Length: 86
Image (tube, rainbow, N blue to C red; front, side, top):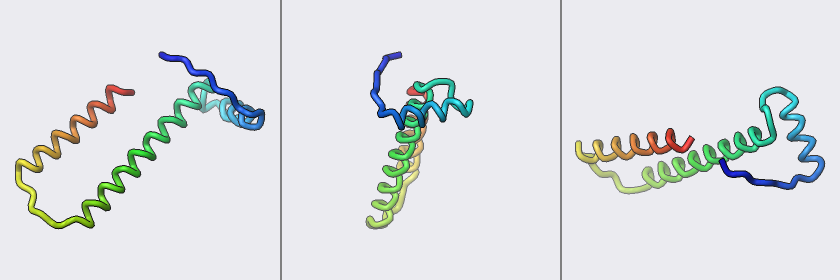
């Protein structure tokens, strides 16, 4: 695992320490990792919403069985990639 040093102003350091003292996180590193994961989820949700809105505003077309198969395979590949990245 790579290491990264960050600097925080005193009020933020106290806030992080407070989050750790609740017992939900065992360290500042764990807390920051959770924040990064939450940001990744928000960005993925935003991207999905944008794609859904784009699809809703586009022209209608009939999906073929090959289209459904391609969509399913792409979704399964993305799920597997996310599992491996965790």
